[in-house]
Length: 88
Image 1 (cartoon, one colour):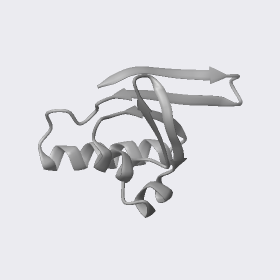
Image 2 (cartoon, one colour; image 1 turned 180 degrees about the vertical axis):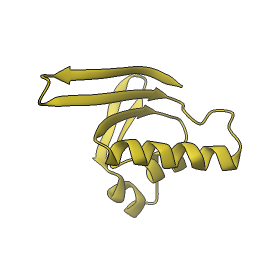
Image 3 (spheres, rainbow, N blue to C red; image 1 turned 180 degrees about the horizontal axis):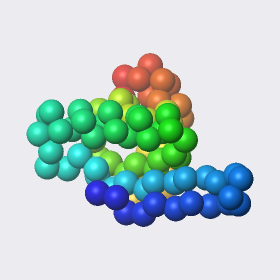
Image 4 (cartoon, one colour; image 1 turned 90 degrees about the horizontal axis):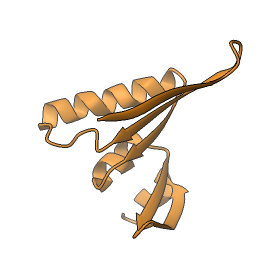
């Protein structure tokens, strides 16, 4: 689910931000993969994407950084590759 899209900046220097909340909830495997592919394509096209999910596999496969929270407090903030190395 898309929560918000934002465009910040001037006409010559615009930051495009997409905020997603549980974007693959209730999707089957094929559509989950299509969604992950779309997220990656949007990032390649210049979008900054903030993705909230409880699905650690999705986070590890569709992101560059992990920010793990517990009860609203950040307990980990690390590159995704470090999360994979730790076996998250």
